[in-house]
Structure formats: structure tokens, C-alpha cells
Length: 427
Image: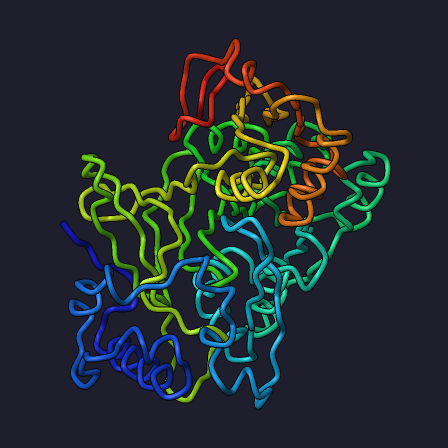
């Protein structure tokens, strides 16, 4: 079964065809992918039927000579180049144009106008600009000229409660922008005098479970949660609003989202394919058709109720450690043979998630191997460095053992892969 949601009205289809024509005109990757397909009159249903052929994955993004359009490669328009790691184990670069900024503004405009256009004071805990999350938040509010003040707080302040409280007492925020787990952790440490003024909590970067949403709203009694589904490649594809009483469906304002059975027998969970739609005359830094980011959507009565961002991943206070990333590091290393991850997930009872990455060697233990693996992970994934090493909101332990001891005393519960083992309750 296939479900298509998002910008699928008549105007959306016209802009989809414009986006396609521009991509075929300027981008070698899409010229190859659409080879032999007549672009004139192509429908969204046709696009959904082509996910096996007309698609792009995170690993494709390294080939910028083919994936970036010629107007980016020739620097014919101004663009920011943002850095992201995601599932691939090493940094990717994503071009972001002025038109992308306006498009991001359109993606978030409904919830900004309803919840945050009334003189709000936003305390943002995203990494320093030009991080993708910071660019999307700052750029979209600026493009909309929203009546709000945006305070960028050094993420290192999460290390120092005294500095954090001093800053927040000065700002007197009415909104928080942060990674999902950071919002919950702030609820544990902030005084009531600050928490009672928080009306809106904007989160993203990981799955927001019903349990964690309820726990966060219990800590911030006057707040609603805006749960964003985004990526550096497509900005903020969708959002939903969560209150104490209900959670809305996900809304997709500017993208076409194809949802297909994942092949695992669970009909309520669909694999997500994202197509980035530009308006007539605009130029995006990165054209996307059927972007297979690896996430799953939970469907109820034909609507997207939650998005599961766990493609073989453990979450450490909002930073995601992907198994693909670890595989690339371990299997490319001349002295390492295998690995497992023992994961203690975030929960209301466990506010500090932990992952033990156990790597295996044969013979003599390589000198300094734990520090080397940690640095490779940090090099590939800046959020892990921020949320684990600097803010101390989570813990990452690297443990090198002989190959024969790799699977000794593992927890009984498997994750979605035979290399991740979960301790306690997996939310």
C-alpha cells in the first residue's frame, strides 16, 4: 500500500513539474535517474511508483559533482554550505540558498503564526550557526518577519547551571528551541520561575515518544510542543503539535511525501520518501526526488501520527549514533574486527542515556584504540561531541575487548539490529 501526503494540490503539482524541469536542466544526477522517462505530464502517482529507480540516499550526497546543480557548482547564486553527518559516518555538505530560506519559512509558517508571532522570546539551544537547525530556525523567523526575539545561547551553558540560569533570567524566555532530549533535561534542572513562562517548546532531531512527550509537558505545565521532522537536506519537512490532551497529525507544507510498506509486515509503519518542491522561479541548493532517509512513519486512518527516527540508531540526549557510522569506523580500521552497542535509552526514570560501544580486536590490544574510535565518531558527528562530551547530558563509553569476549554478558533484548542491545525499557 502507498500513501502520498503533503503538497499534492493542483498548484503543488505544477511546482513539482517546475522543480523537475529545473533539476533535469541543471543536475547530472537527475538527468541519469530520469533517463528514458518522459517528464512532460508526469504525475505524483508516477513519482511514487518509481521509488526503486528514481531515488536518492544519504550516501549519494558525497558525489557533489553530480548531485549539486550547475548553478551551485558555478557559484551563480549565493549559498551557505551546511555540514551534516547523519547515517553515513562522515560529513556531508549541503548547499542552502536564499530561496531555500524562504521555502523553510513556508514550511514552518502555520505554527509560527499561531504560537510564536506575539512578541515571544526564544531561547535557542541549537549548535552555533551555521548549523542546519540554527539556520532553519533563525532564517525562517527572519524571512517571515515574525514578531519574536531569537536568543542564541552558547550550548556550552548546558555544562554550567549557574551561567545557564543567569542567561535565562536575563532573557525571560517564553519559548525553547532545542533537541528533543534537551527539552526534557531542561525541565529537570530549571526552576519553576522560568518553566512557568515557557509556552512553546520546539523540538526535533529524534523520535518523540508519547511517554517522553507527557513527561516533558508535566515539567512545563503551560507549554505546548511543536515536534518537527526535519533534515539538513529538506529543512523542516513536517510538524505536529502536542498538548496535554492530544497530538495532531503531521502536516507537510512544502514537500511531497511518499509512504510505502517497509517490507517488514507491519502495515501501520511506512518507509518515507521525500520530494522537495520549489515554487516557480526559485532555485534550491539540492534538488531531491524520493529521498530515502531511512525513517518510518506510523499511520492511523490514513494520517501520519508519528515519525520513527531510528534506522539502526541509538539516541544520546538528542544526538544520534547510527550503526552505519560505527560500521564504517570499525570495519575500515585495520586492527578491529567487530562491535556491539549496549544501549541504556532515555526515559523519565533514566534522564541520562548511555551507550557502551564494545569493539573487538584479535591478539594484542591496539594502543590508544578507545580514544581513537571516540575521536573518529566525534569527527563524523558534531552533535555527539556537543551533547555527550561538552554538555555531559549523555554518556558514550568505548570499550575494547578481545574478539572472544565481544558478546559476553549482553542484555537479552535486541534493538532493530543484532548489534544493538537494549538495557531496561526501550521507549
